[in-house]
Image 1 (cartoon, one colour):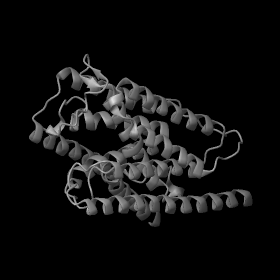
Image 2 (cartoon, rainbow, N blue to C red; image 1 turned 90 degrees about the vertical axis):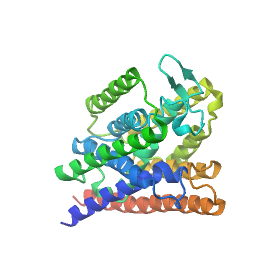
Image 3 (cartoon, rainbow, N blue to C red; image 1 turned 30 degrees about the vertical axis):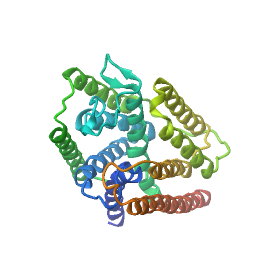
Image 4 (cartoon, rainbow, N blue to C red; image 1 turned 180 degrees about the vertical axis):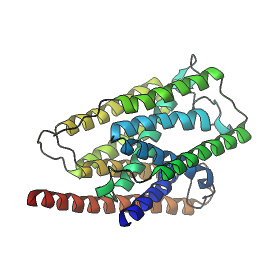
Length: 332
């Protein structure tokens, strides 16, 4: 019963953390504007729960979750908001598609790649890792049963519908059939790849464990580079972000294969990413609720401190769990 309560609490925590990381920690909305959570929580929270549970129930890990995060990107930005295709999203004159324009597909290479980073890594990956860090003993286990998984799927579907309805009502934009079809095909490809990629198990080679602070700082630095790369550099910005992504993924792949990766490193990556989001918020204007500058500043500080506190608690619990696990292994 205790484990069941803990798992439900973790699932509820992820449902709440995901939209706060995705939109509020980033700085799109201050805490004085909470009404967007009504449609964002089901979308982000339901999506994060669904991704995590589908991966963990099938005995899979981060490669699967990141690929499902890429599929999520196309669901949200290709169908729910259509921002990948809309030249003037919600009439906000942000010029999202002006940079590295690809006329054959009607998309911006920069905005599309940027969204894959934002959602696959931050919205989904960081949120999942931060909450899993709070329950390290159950981090690789499913938290929900069939009923809970069904509820998560329904919440996600409701979030998609609500965000799509909001976008259409306030914008009246519809992507072309070819664009919808292309997005759907890539969603299917990402989902299939997520579960078809070979699962690498077995013993890892012994190696020197990297300090968690080092991997966390690397995630913070690379994350800030992605967030602060000027889109006006057009294809140069695309190249820079693509190189950063390649370095990040290659670093994790190489170190994890050599046995130098622990749960603390995974959590520190999430903490570094969260810190980058929180720091970036101070350099951008909110989409809504930016009138009271003092309130916005206070919101940024509260959210950043909250993310750092969540990371610290996770690190303490994970370190304690790793030490107790090692003691038990040695005793056996």
